[in-house]
Amino acid sequence: MKTLKVLEGPTAVGKTALAIEWALADRTEIVSADSRQFYRELDIGVARPSPEELAAVPHHFIACKSIEEYYSVSRYEQEALALLEELFKKHDVVILAGGSGLYVNALCHGIDDLPDPAPELREALKKQLAEEGIESLQQELKRLDPAFYEQVDLCNSVRLRRALEVCITTGKPFSSLRTGPRKQRPFRIERYALNRPKEELYERINRRVDLMMEAGLLDEARALWPQAHLNALQTVGYRELF
Image (cartoon, rainbow, N blue to C red; front, side, top):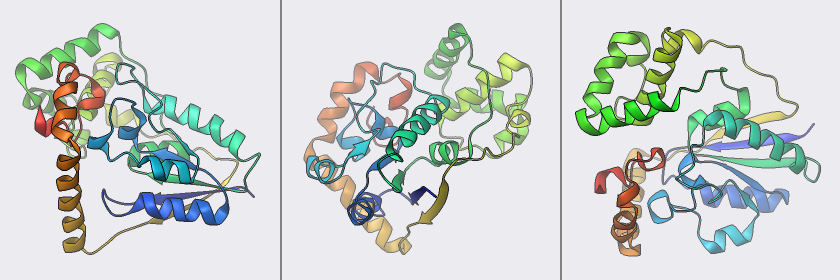
């Protein structure tokens, strides 16, 4: 049976190097599930694999979208499944390099079929965030869906807005709609978690930040500042510099 090997782990733990090592050993290709690395305009701040790493093994879902484009996890699920169908015609094994748990789970098990909001609602919530701050979104979510409020990363404005979009569009708590059964995939899934001792991981993260700044992260952030309101830039690495 065809096999999807999933490599997960925290930032800076070493997933990129190990995924390439696996792909070379299996003579296969890598599919990225790091939603921050999908975007062409984002490079240093998302730790995109180097040109040498990208040349070593075929990579997919790296620098393939524009930050101007709204790209949802449901679209990723559809497009990644279609890609895997093609890759499994050539390979018995494909590597999925994780970075975003939501996207890994969507590809492995599917996601609930949730409605897309009206563009007016999406813009209204963006405006609310810009004018009233993330605390206003937190309090509105606490009122509309206290259960999800207790689960979500309250500093992630994208997740907060998405939950509010669904709550307002459906009139139901977001958490009540996230109960669908796991979808069966026509391939075997093997999930591996890579980790390191906390002190070592923190040292690697700090070193990565230093290297990013040396490579020009501040200049990259300045160039992206006019688009700082876009979903793709509501992420660690850029948000702190805006």
